[in-house]
Amino acid sequence: MPALVTMFSRPRCGLCDEARRVILALRERIPFEFEEVSVDGDDDLELAYGVRVPVVLVDGEELFELVVDGEALAAAVRNRTS
Image (cartoon, rainbow, N blue to C red; front, side, top):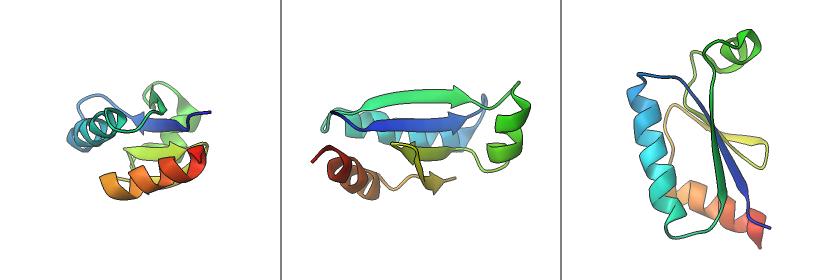
């Protein structure tokens, strides 16, 4: 079963745009599910992640905030799917 990568983000977020590019480029090499969730408009999500976006989880485990390391993400995804 492929890993699930979840990114909490918000509109007009340059770091979120860069994280999305890293994630989608990696997805071309390694199969995994990807979902992006906007924290805007959800009080609980804004409180939990608002000033830290992008926040990236792999299978529910928070691994990155603000900057996503593509190779570290690749290793995490591979570990979850093997």
